[in-house]
Length: 478
Image (cartoon, rainbow, N blue to C red; front, side, top):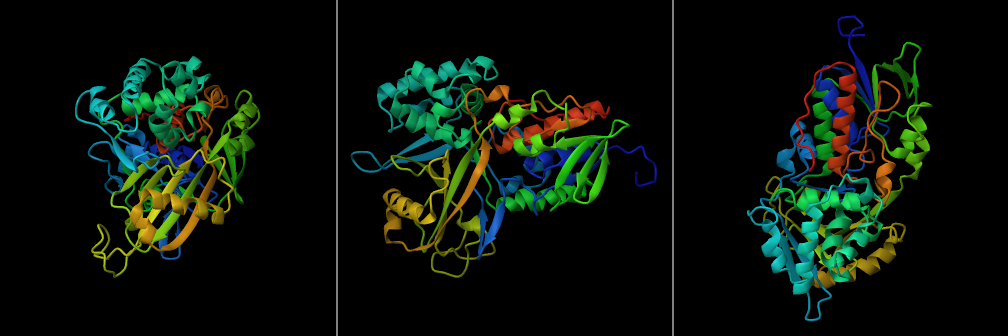
């Protein structure tokens, strides 16, 4: 029923309150539909969320985005959060190699304002972690990448490592450059990553526009963006949001509409968007909605391990860095975002009410963590604290106040060769039923960008089917 008692108002139900579901709900509501968003968890944000641990606000994992992530940037603007997750003015990634024979060596991957591919030429020419011959070979491989079509099905069928080997990339080049970027964005090493997805990442991020790979990250807890501000935006758009509510069935009614069983309530809808992971989608799909739904179960998952260390003093003077010659992958300073502030001797914090920083909170993001995802915390502590002391000499004299771990065993879909043929489109065979989620056929790996894009696509398909005019303001990926 509409607010005035008529039955002409179209109703859409979105199942899942991650970035895909939030995006779909906002787009549908912005186009005049009545929208109900149903989420089983007590919060929004999916797998990019925060929680409280004592006095700290902890992100479950370190999430970043790039300037080329136009969909996620739209999301930040739409929830009024862009100022809280700013981008670097220009790409600048410190890379510290602790295995260098002469002692730890710092290199940088950064860009200039020159056109592609010259924007990275100076950085590559002086990158100390590769030999002159390896740098030249990287340049040739980059030019070959630029000519590829990431959507070519043939690329999906081979692994990235095979392609790199064919183009003269040494084991060191793979470690110090290709996997340095690829593991963090694909959640897989080159040997286990689809060449199609790898080509998409490197061509779009590094070889499309000079600023495409500039890095952005939240300077506040992710929950502030993906839960608090998102909920405010949904409320303002008129979306009814039901948390702690499990959807147990989605069925077609005799009149061609849809019925969604959400908790104890039955919701009638003209359109349904399933914005949940592949196994949950498989369980909810009505018979005949997609061809061979069991292929969804063939899409594997990949874990990410996050290690959190709170020191009694500052041990890192930059916001983040990447590491070579060590199990450590990427390290971020999360001190201010976590709320680790009180009176103390180290001077004023860069954010937050004039408080003073006491100690430092570092988060280690360990992607493709299949070998360590179930490792006991005590073992991880013995393994990683000495590695941090190798990387950060100031940590050798610092006291560790807290050491804890967060584990996302199904953090992303596994970007293995052949996964492209398994990922479904947004539109199903059942009129009015649509799929969203980073695991669907977005062309992107499992990123916040891919999730938001999937929400756009599902909402757009629903609005087209319902005859509702809508715009698609995103710049399409190269």
